[in-house]
Length: 187
Image: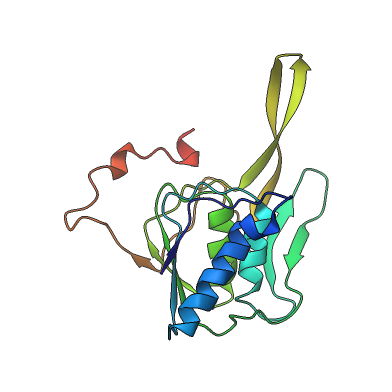
């Protein structure tokens, strides 16, 4: 079982990157006898797409598409694995909730669609877009959506989220806070 809250990396310290830390944790768990893995992405708001792609590639085989991005007027750009990952074949489950967004959705959908993971929990946030900030004045700017993420099969994540294979509420009578969760479709 591994949990992390975002996909980060400090360029001056590659060992601080989420993917490097995750791989070290998985290696340690495997050395202790672990044969299956649960990655908990509840509350993970995303972060660097490159880190999510790095993680996903370690669970897939050579030439598998992890994600695609499309921007206006451009064809899809695909993130493709460059060899069988070191954890290829390891049984894997992702846990998601309504606060799992962006890179966490890209990672879980990419590995799930190749049949290498199951998703447990509730529908994710649905942030399948990425933005850039364009300055307007010295102290103001505008955030513009410049592209969208798609799963390997071409499905949009935007405003839909990732539906779990095994829906689970944390509370037996349903999650009373679920009605309070604002997802991308609500904004």
